Image 1 (cartoon, rainbow, N blue to C red):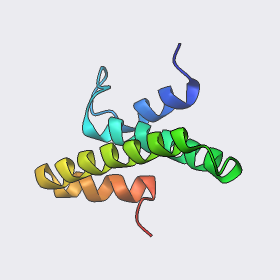
Image 2 (cartoon, rainbow, N blue to C red):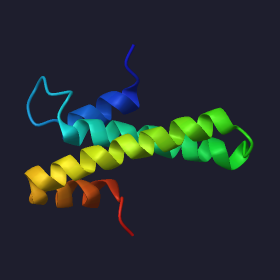
Image 3 (cartoon, one colour):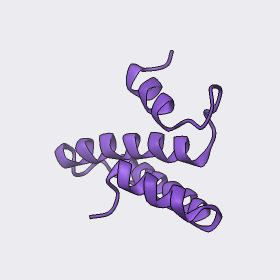
Length: 87
């Protein structure tokens, strides 16, 4: 079962009606999970297995962002702006 938040993210970042695998959608979904796990880690500082998973997700998002930056710099800039990834 797909969560409403996940469905909303897919609808917002998809390029066409059945698009669920484009880098934009994947990065948006990873960002949502990363934010959720970051909140969890603030409360449970010694949860090292979650920490490892979080670092793996951050690395996966970084690789997807690098891929997108190499392919289409404008899409990359729009995406990091809309997700608020750069301060």
